[in-house]
Picture (cartoon, rainbow, N blue to C red):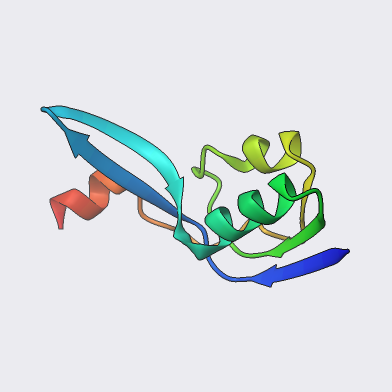
Length: 83
């Protein structure tokens, strides 16, 4: 079965016991990975900036991205914390 997912990816900042971690988040990430683990073909329609570090994660798990790279200036997590 082929599944099309239309949603956004995010970067989650997790703070646990004074340690900070960045991880993929958002409905698009969770749904794509879950559906792929169930052996379905996944077409992910989303947008993220050039600084999104997990684009390779999707490729490694055979999750197809369609024109996902945004050319808009998207603030980094550090800039968001400074706002």
